[in-house]
Image 1 (cartoon, helix red, strand yellow):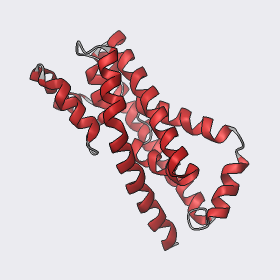
Image 2 (image 1 turned 180 degrees about the vertical axis):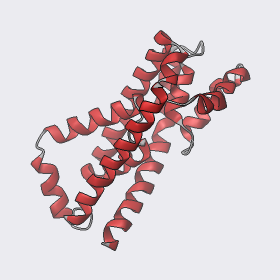
Image 3 (image 1 turned 135 degrees about the vertical axis):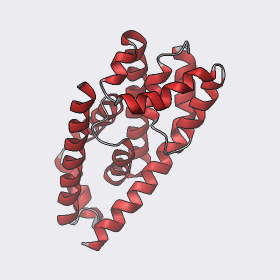
Length: 193
């Protein structure tokens, strides 16, 4: 039941994101850097705070795909500050998700994913000592459900210190790949209209 409501939240989040993208495109914000800069300035000092909060929440409650928000961060705040906000939000959200699963167990994970997806990745725990290496590789390489795997890591005996080390060292490459890839796709879509 909880996974079903999360699915509806995800669909709603994606719909909101598409409307936001439509707003950016229709107002020329993706093709005119001056218009984009004015839009960002209209939010004042709250723009980075709002975006950082969104990044933290999307890791814990996957309403909007993280790869998409990473690209938006680069577009809205530029390559340096966009990366800093993406990385910081992702790190904080990942640590919170890990600690929540450490405290609440697999029931917490099942609130945000369906049983089939959970079963697909929970087998990684059977890998014993190889789990840490597989986990680090999955965080390093884009394309894996790293938010889910961060939660599954909370079911292991992995220490918070080791978890933070893996996330801190492996996440940047994936964030850069997602950010730039999605940014390029969004910019191409923006020029089509």
